[in-house]
Image 1 (cartoon, rainbow, N blue to C red):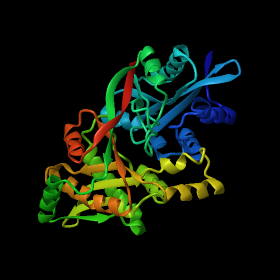
Image 2: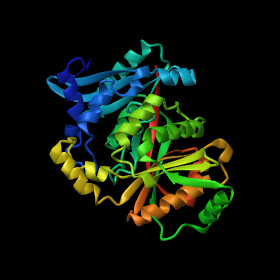
Image 3: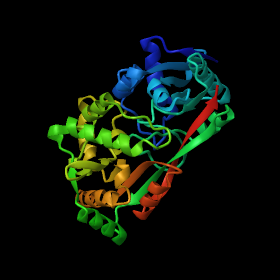
Length: 367
């Protein structure tokens, strides 16, 4: 077995298509869109304005048996002043020797950049699908959440990786009525002059800028956080515009000043799983057909600026979104991801009736 860097387009194709061999026959795997994966892995995403990525393949003879990406995120380094690199896009067909070889290749690249540790999996950052699934293998992942075989946990831990943080996903059955406590809290927010409006697709760039500012203000104390850049926000606006439901992407304001936000998306994985990673004309028609049958949603983003926490803004956002979810016939929602020690949000989600059903783990390995 040898681990070699990806240097040719042929290598990149092998890197991209390896998951189809690993997950063949797995009823819960959702094939990623190959075009989007290529853009990420070739540095076309604005994340790479301040980042580097190196891809590696593990080979046994003529057979590809594993892959990994080593990621140097200079934006993270500037914000945290902590020399930590990252790994992601990890897949392995074989045993622990292959995993150790892949991690050693990623470590070698990052050690050469002066890093003290390697952390992951992130694909390629905490703003993207991240974490290794360690609990909840009995159902498919929600949209923009990762998935992997159960055996990966043992492979990474045998190679010396140790848990640094867990991320939780909660599942909620959309209730017949909003809990009275939530209603009281939402009413209190309205009495304080807080109003909620949907995102405006005609001025999407401006509203996504508001989302970015609120996100950076609300999440800045969270573990692993790095601020979202204007370029990343514009990329998100461009790529999510066809998928957004304006009445489920909400901004809370008081006297015209944004103080909170919420973004729900239909669980598009329920449509994407039928495309086999390709979005040509036939894939688009399939997507539009299955999109109409989606009855689950994912709460992707929720935040309130620090000075307006505890004033019912979150309850008001939830209440407005709840009525639209019911009107559109949604049955369940996933709230993900939530840091395992973010007790404020955990209590809030449980007050809404959320039940933890998946756990994702971020690992760290010293260099």
